Amino acid sequence: MKNRLLVAAGVVIVIVGAVFALQGFGVIEGSAMSNNHTFEVVGPLVVLAGLVLAALGLRHRAGPGLR
Image: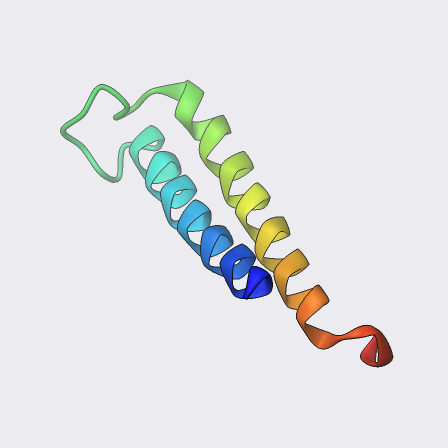
């Protein structure tokens, strides 16, 4: 159960980070984050954090004998 939660949280964080990045690069417009250089940096970092979290969930899911 905990592993699924880690993977699900990681996927949500990746999506949020992707939206941050796309707004920072100006692909998605209409907010204060659009064309903001801060979110050009923060977005990919958030995506990376989400990928790490999801990978941890998948790694623990494999079990001790399969590593």
